Length: 82
Image 1 (cartoon, helix red, strand yellow):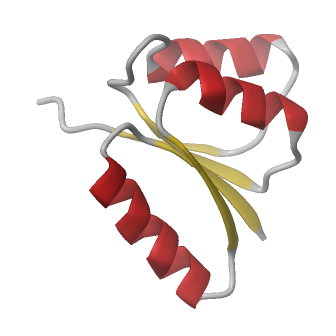
Image 2: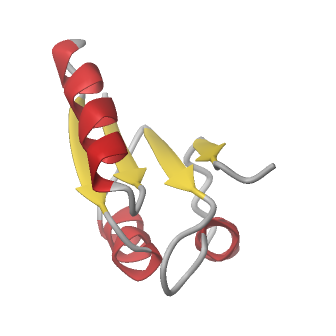
């Protein structure tokens, strides 16, 4: 299973990556919305873990653009917002 993590908090993204890799997932990490959107468009992922508060292009916009492209990869939205 191949997973994309899009999160600007590098320590958090690295911890999630390590945990998923320990369970034998293939994991790519991006730290901003524009790069994450590009990766999601260019590669086939089984799931995306997406932060809402990202620099540049926020998680809601990344999700909307993927859906507008017809990309229905499952997306888990994460946020520290209340």
